[in-house]
Image (cartoon, rainbow, N blue to C red; front, side):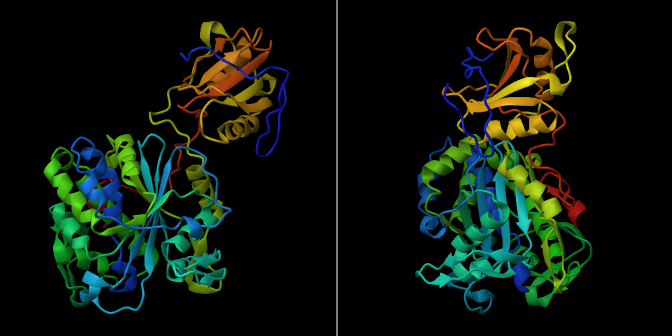
Length: 479
């Protein structure tokens, strides 16, 4: 029998791999908000799959080739999720010139949009621009080399554009990024107007001549210049800190997503196309975000609602050398990053734990000899699940993969292992165990299909983070 190697360790057992039968103006606010444009392009696009407008939209997107500037030692792709890096640029080129003069361009807003496998939920992770981080070496478009350096995270964009920010986020999180979208603010007004305005909520009357912003207190809909002024203002709202700005940014994006995913928008192809046309004219993306990729993404996300979209900020703590800077709180940030990396959650809610059947009393986990097999195309899935089971006391005797792919996860067992299989069914709910004639006596086999293997008691794929914002909440809760 061939041995099966796995990333961190190798297990062996005498049993052969299972072959189961058929499965049963302040710069910080210059770009705040228009990343919701990119977010909404992704979410709203699903409604256009039946109308044939994609090719016209596709021709409006400015694309850049970045693959050869991302480096060789990139994080592995561990699942079928989609990770899109969204950046806001404060460039004053072209139509942006009327908003002042600034040399070059910066990215003061960086968000990683993670779409879970199956397209059933999404989370936007904000990276505070004042975060002090180690940045990898980068290469500019003209081939100039930028050495590795330690500094504020938004310096990566200035050093080498989107590709450098992409490399930096991957190096910090070990999350494989699939695509990037860059948005400037010239088209922001067009997009907001295409939505017929966006609802905001402010705690008091606002008069900010620098941002051309004049708002009454409370709930209201903003359009055009007022919307742009709202996302540009800095000192008249909150405490002026980057973290406080991010909270309002997330509230604004939540409102845009709520408006963009409203049934009135999604059932009106004319309005939807008008919105997406305005949006695609305002974004830049990598050249692998092709028409076919967008169509596939749209199809997988059909049915996405605002309630399944949330926004969080990377947990941070004070940077000791400078009170005006922060650093990642890795004790809290790493579980968030790991959950995104290893997101194998089912699209549907996890079913209730399987109760021992026919009066079978489960044995303790340490009496279960289990083999775990990956029957999907997602690398590393069996190993990660086996590690989780081992932490709960199960005896993992083998980790491997099957040549055949299966849509559903199965728990199989050999002669004399009925009670052991009952324990596995409690640990991996929703998959009633069944006997397998080819199984080794006393052994249990967990064969992971495309529907995943969520262990009982696990949180959702991406854990809750303090201060997170859900897109379906009342906008005034975030003001």
